Image (cartoon, rainbow, N blue to C red):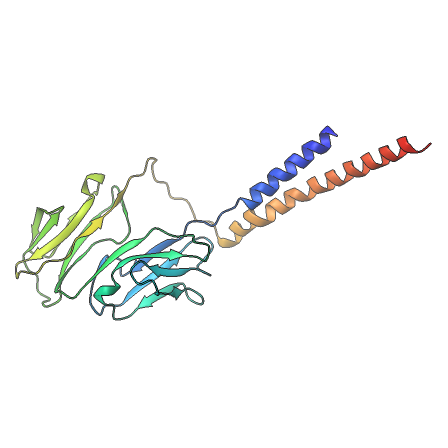
Length: 242
């Protein structure tokens, strides 16, 4: 009976491990990779995750009726975006599972700051660009962090060679013709462990490890449990027969 109980416990552990597999968190990616857009720009949102995009939708905090379901494509395109369509966007499934949100700004003005939409990693090279809708020529540009002027540029851009946590904050730019962008947050992640390159697993291999191997492991346990159970039944019958 102790062996039978052990087998049952092992079987239950395997079942719990199988059932406890969770869908990897889905991330939202914006294309072009920036947080500020001119009015009438086109913006593309991508929901990305290990199990693909089926059943997910892109949601918008301000427009409650906004529905962009990812049914046959892995992306959602907003053409000719308007200022009122700015705000927080995220990926969401029918069960309420959500990705981190991205807060975009859409302006009817003449100047935007192009900064990464997603958090950057400490040590990365980050370039901030100030774009003026009314001119293609470079203007003297001032870059501000948390309201303080940090740099001036004649090319309309600055580069942070090795970004750190201290560079995190709200950035904006002003051009010499009087144009000024909105503020956007630059978020910096810090890795506790050194980053190592690992080859990504294919979807087929992931499916095998997640679904096939647990079933293969369960089969001998079920067989052993059945044999022990039958042995107990025969023992009981032999004891009861007079």
